[in-house]
Amino acid sequence: MPVHERARRGPCLHHRLNQRHNQRLNLRLKAALMAALQVALLGPMPPVTAASMPALSAASAPALPMAPCLNRGQQHWDVLVVGDEPAGVMTALELADQLPRLAGRPNPRIALVTEADTRLGLGGVIARSGLAYLDRNQVPRDMWDVLTPFAPSSRLYERFLRITGVNHIAVERRRASTALAKALRQAHIPVLSRADLVGVLRQGRRLCVVQSRRYGSLGADLVIDASLGARVAHLAGVPFQGGFGPRELAHQSLALGWIFEVQGLSLQQLRALEEVFSQRLLNPKDQEAQAWLKLWPRYRHHPKHLLTDLLDENGNPQLAFSNTTDSADQGSPAMAIAFHGESGLGTDLRQTPVRLDHANIALLPGRLSFNALLLRNNAVQNRQVLAGQNRPLPWMYPYADKVTAFFMRHGAKRVEWMPELYVRSADQLANPVAVLGETEMANGGVPHNQALGTFSYFLDFRGGIKGIAGFPKPTFNFGYRHTLPQELDNLAVLGPAAGYGGLGGGAGRILELNISIGQGLAIASALALADGMPLAAIDPVRVAKYMPPGFTAYGRPSNATRYHLVIARFRYLLDGLWRRQDDGHWEVQRPGNTAKVRRP
Image (cartoon, rainbow, N blue to C red; front, side, top):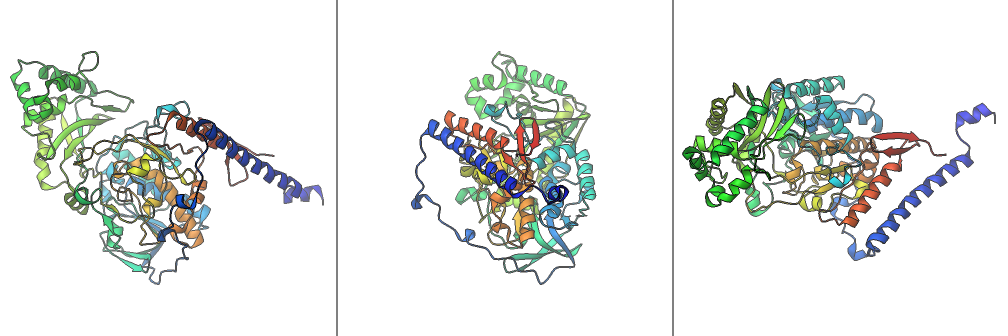
């Protein structure tokens, strides 16, 4: 064979066999190293027996290919994404990349449909609720020499930060809305706004058409419901678990937030105001300030708690502190005590409608964004707010006026309230294919070979849930199968309404986690379209292999010992160094650096 012909046809058979042999050796060496380290530190693992194997459920039975829908709607799409929340927008953008690559659809038809009025801004809780202070992945300290403290949990979330112009924590709503709309236009994804969804058409286990008063019947091969309350899933009759779980938890929901922006008050002026309030509260001769404390049982019955909460270890007033250049956090209750005292409002959300909490503050150009006002809530009211497009209820406006008056009295020039409430929770899927609840999170999350990435954050029940105390901060591997209802083959629910098993919603409300889950869901959707199979039939191990490199999972149980952490760290570094790519390359990864090399 001529040399040029051999070069065109690729390496010879002997070379290819050697290449495969080397790859198998590398994988065996990796497995042997892991096993040796595990035995050395923890001793041999218990044998796997039939009794220790999980029982197969109906959901894990072999699936059949999906039959095509007879009714394809007036408009038909490959994937219909419902809701303009950040997770839905970013998942739509990821679908535009993955469908040509994995599903063989070079010109994918993807639409984003929402009942919201995007003339007020596109981007859900960021654009219209004004969420400017982003909760970020909190990398455990033992990983800080290989990852930054706020290392993104996925390539898609990294892309979100880049599109919206986030440096560390703060996102500017108008800039983000404009940038997200531009990204959708560039990806040729239309936004069907003010859709007024009224029903669906099902065919067996398949959701075929979503009906809109404004756009008619919208058919789709797959539907991803990324709306806060899972609007389409409810219309399709998918069962949901109320509140946060069974019995009393079914009636509970996270407190609502109403975010406001303050102009004319700088962070330095805010800190000076906190110091004044602290000094007044610690002055027994200040009768007005002492009267404020009567509204706070914690301080009325235990005066020593006041010193602990107002002063740092050096005896100085605790003031708003900044861990980043674009954010600040209030550690002191001084401002909240003053507000409730001047307004004559109680402080316990079980007895009073509102509470001004310690603020998460985003430092925006010319203004401060406060995520601080909590509104009493329950599961029934939460559904009412979601049905009303997250608009504030009439009873809430007088309390917003009290907050405005308080800040104006103390130096602010203007207080602007966001048009929609910040809704933190929703009813959750009753029968997801897999649950990602607080127990699974505490145990380290999904299996390593199914992990899309790792997320670490407190289960945050701001405002409190009756009978629920705090949990240790979990560091867990996440997958996407908790977004899949068992009842329908081509529907996923992305967001706080997914299958978080109740209390897992404490982390399931966070934008970063849901955007990162959306990346894996987009890959699974592309594979399902390529194979003509239900979403639940796609192997999650296969999906995890298509996730971009550089985001190796490092989840661990909340009660992990030092030895477990050593193993997890070793595995993280080893996985990062030896990740096989689809193009025949091996990617050698180092912190902050990746380089492709071809193995001989």
